[in-house]
Amino acid sequence: MTETPVIHDPLDLPEKKALIDNIIAQYRDLPGATMVVLNSLQEKIGYLTKRMQTYIANELHVPVSKVHGVVSFYSFFTTEPRGEHVIKFCIGTACYVGGASQLIDKAKQILGIEPGQTTADGMITLEVCRCVGACSQAPVVVIDEVNHGRLQPSKFSRLIQEVQKSEVVA
Image 1 (cartoon, rainbow, N blue to C red):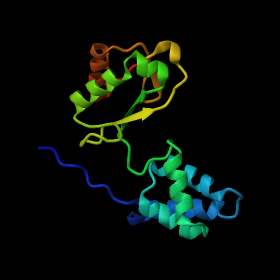
Image 2: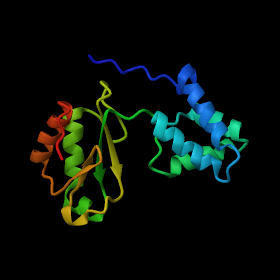
Image 3: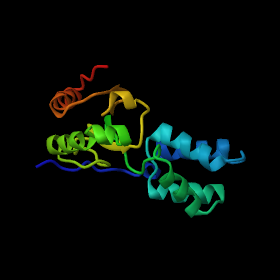
């Protein structure tokens, strides 16, 4: 039986808290500081916990609902750490019609997780996105920012195996 890794809130880690405080201090007085701070922290830390969002709101003197609203509206932001590798399924119209749901089902079967979750070893996160702009290649899956188009479930299984071995090729 695999254990779920313990996720520490960055506010509990002195070096991460210092980074958070430095970013807030750097951008605090800028117009649109909330978005700039959130983008910077997402980039540097990789995720924005609910506790971090509350802390940021308090430090910027904005309503917590504003920070939560921004984080929940934009798909770029995540509230939990992502895996070492991220597999995104395009579910735009062309990809959906082209069989994206079959690819998602195959990934769920192989990895034992749902979109929005990360494997217990922290290796792979599954996500869905609305459109990657490669409709002529539908269905498209993006693995670590590399598009893989016209995928069939059997070929996709091999790609997942490559990701698990950390040998993803473009």
